[in-house]
Image 1 (cartoon, one colour):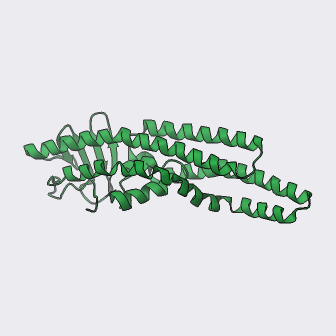
Image 2 (spheres, one colour):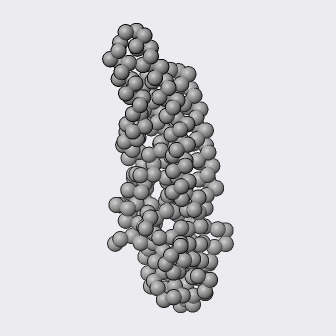
Image 3 (cartoon, one colour):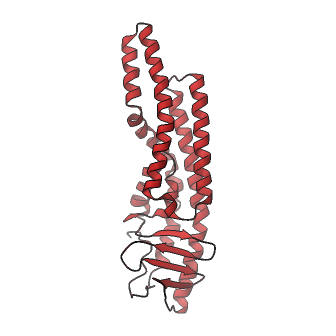
Length: 250
């Protein structure tokens, strides 16, 4: 069971993903076995198994695995509010996600500022960071489904960011090591080579620490997720099973 992946839109750049997943699991206690897609005329929850594998909400109506579910007035109101509140949550998630991207970019820049990089490397790093941020923000703006942020996609983005940025920084540090060696400072040269070799491993925990500032924004989403969990209570799928779209562990 994965973390409530509607907020996986927060898993956008570098260190943001682990932090958000941790907050949702430990603070909001929010999980779901479904992916969710918010369309213009309906909301779809889907998963491979168990049944129901597909749940469709549309202005108070409910279909599970292509079977219409008869709802009394109270549960119809609950489903209407569930869909409305979920739609209202989407722009909030996007906003936090955009802030997460900005924060991650600033974290990388702050870390790079203490590495003694050349002005040329700093300029190239800024351009690459800006390009990656624009790309991911555009994806956030257009995304309406957690399928857009499945694990493979997230891992692919992380790999692309790392392969784009880390060699640039490591290359500059390698040149610093060469310059130090040429000047006779072999200890400094060895230290710089070691830092360049372990750059990715050492940088991640520091970035994670800087990303802690995003935590209050993530936590602010918890009441809305709790409300969704409450609204589904008492509603059952066509097979008689509880409509368990969101779990909060409460």
